[in-house]
Image 1: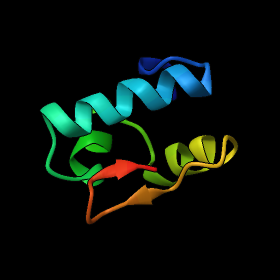
Image 2: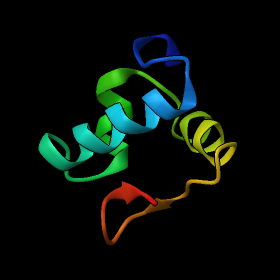
Image 3: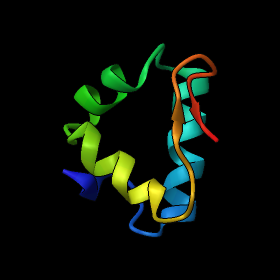
Length: 60
């Protein structure tokens, strides 16, 4: 459920990248913990021209 993250894409980006940096080693773990579909999150952040970089473990 994306409801656990901010609806605003920029705020969502900030929260997700902070969580990835501080608490999760990959996007799959974050999505599992927040009970959200990985593709849903990827598409939401793609709307503001950010894509997940697994090597950096962040949306850039």
